[in-house]
Length: 133
Image (cartoon, rainbow, N blue to C red; front, top):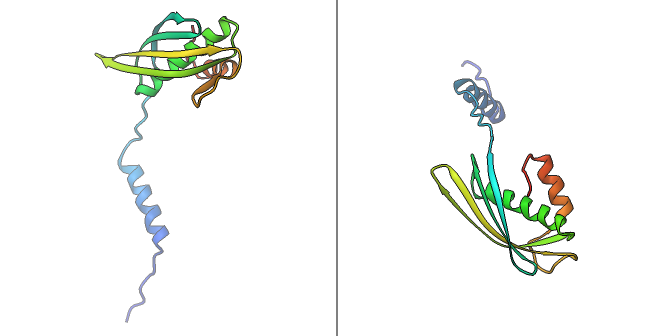
């Protein structure tokens, strides 16, 4: 009777992973958005609407982040330190993504779950190459 080699399941998994790596090239997609601009409109007192447009978004979150960056910078421009997100509607047509967002701005941290510290958000936007107002 011939001795049989015992191969561990981890070794088999490793071999499968390596084989998979050799069969296909990595799927690398570079995120290169084009920011088309921001339209800002004061609705009433502390209520502000931001309309943003961009191309190359990966989805709604990219458009919402652009609007958040605009809201944070707007709050700082108006000498307010905080904003609270109320809503963002996103549409896409022919590769052009549009966001319609509404925020309140305030000097003190507002009540609610979707509040932002404007200075922190603006710094984060700069680090990630997202323009502000």
